Length: 267
Image (cartoon, rainbow, N blue to C red; front, top):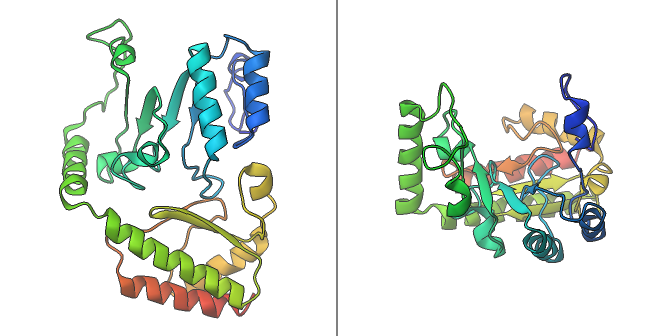
């Protein structure tokens, strides 16, 4: 994280071969490709960030990134572990109009059980055994219980398409939280993509880690515990996204907004 190993065991070579860029920084992106011309193997990006709160890329950032990677033969790899099948059936990439070369997925793809998946262009995937020479396997690869749960989940998402309901509920929640915060004169901003959102305790729009880090985390902590006292379990960090699920109802949303009004009045 931020170019510094956050776990023992990360080798100096790994750090040396990894470039960390600021999200939504077009100039930094261009500079990195100029400085490492024809040397960048791949760019890994969350098309909707979930771990500095919910943050979206600007159109110019995405289009510049796609153009640079195409020009230099660099793979564009989307991490859709959070956004895949959540914000849309086709993931965030289907909403943004940019197609990556590879996509990684998890969480929803396993129907709540431990499962990950990746896919992409056929010419890249053909390098994986048995078609190619790259070995990829694991003890739990293709675990029948997890894959059965995943197939059931993806079939439901395809056939029942809960996304319209999710968008309606999420929009209702987002508007309710914003109005409640404004009524209590709480500095705030909110970012939402489909059923994924974050209410930031900061007045300026959050577009990257520097702006996210200016959030009032002490106030967020009071908000979290105030909501918990009222039976509402919110994300336990300012920098974790909130998810609305198909199990939620209009009553759940209204109850959450009512609790938020009470809590904001105490902050």
